[in-house]
Structure formats: C-alpha cells, structure tokens
Length: 101
Image (cartoon, one colour):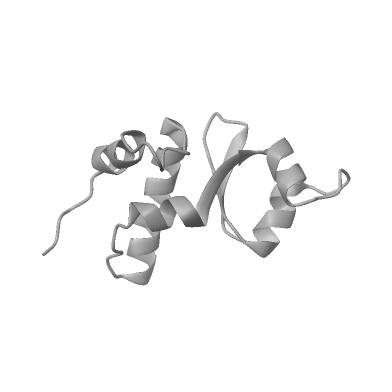
C-alpha cells in the first residue's frame, strides 16, 4: 500500500504528535523539501517514518549546536557540520536541521 505524503500532511504529522513535535513549522517545510529532493536525486521513493526522522534529525540554533557538539568558538559551525553530517538550512531562521551524529 502506498499513500502520498504531501507537505501539509508531513508537517501535520509532527505538529500534532505530542512526543515528536521538536521542529518548527519552517523547519518541517525545509525537512520535507530535503526529502523530496533526495527522492528525486536517488530516483526512489522513501518510506515516511516520522518517528525515525524525529530521532535522526534535530533543529537547533547555532549556539545550541556549538554547545551540544563542543564546537570551538573560532570555528564556523555550519561549515564544520557540513563536513561531518547533513545540514538543512531553514529560510528566515537562526536555526538549522542536522542529521544527528
């Protein structure tokens, strides 16, 4: 069985979940766009498992990233993370989404 996940249904799944609502509205839009581009790039559908996504990805500010990953103050956080993991930038936000590592 296959159900098409739309941008709205993707966001609503997270926003209505009491346990996995750890992304902003704009962050969920960026995350949805990332998975859409990934599907197109690999030419395969990706199974939507919101629990797995919520456990594998985090939306954090630059200061939170610096603290959580002990990144030196002199290092560009985004550049450092791009060398080590997936970084999804969020338009008009001081936060980014990263694949946790």
